[in-house]
Image (cartoon, rainbow, N blue to C red; front, side):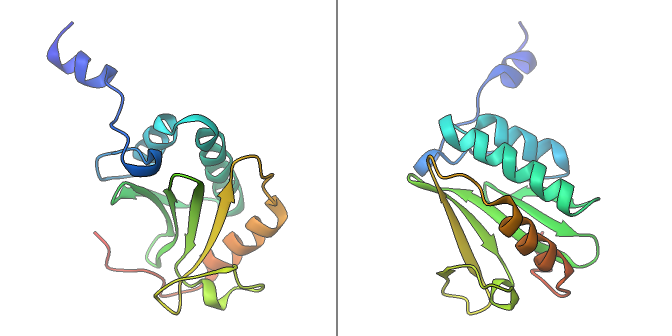
Length: 146
C-alpha cells in the first residue's frame, strides 16, 4: 500500500466525547465522513439527523467546520450545527429562540437554543422536522463563517 492509501484507510481521531476530528470541508462528503466516524449509538443518531435534515430541506448546504457538521441554505448562512459529547448529541439551532416551540436548552447566546439526544431516546422526527423547517426559513442566520 502507498502512503496515500494508508491515509484513506485511517479512521479519524476521536476527540472528547467521541466527536470525530474531521478536516474542515464543504459539501456532503465531509459530513458523511463525520457520520461514518461516529462511535456506537451516536453513528445511528447522526445518520438519522442527516437524513431528516436533507429530507426536510431539499438542497441543504452542508459542511464540516470546527469538527462539527453544519447545515445551511445557500446565501442565507448556517441554521443548524451538530456536535457529539460524551452523553448526548447536541443539535444547535443558531436562531432557536425564534422557533415554536423553543428548543429546551439555553445557550450563552440569546438567539441559540439546543436540543440534546441521549442514548436510547427515540427521535421525535415530527418535532425535529418542524424545528429544521422553521430554522431553515430564518434569514440572516449564522453567516460569514468560513
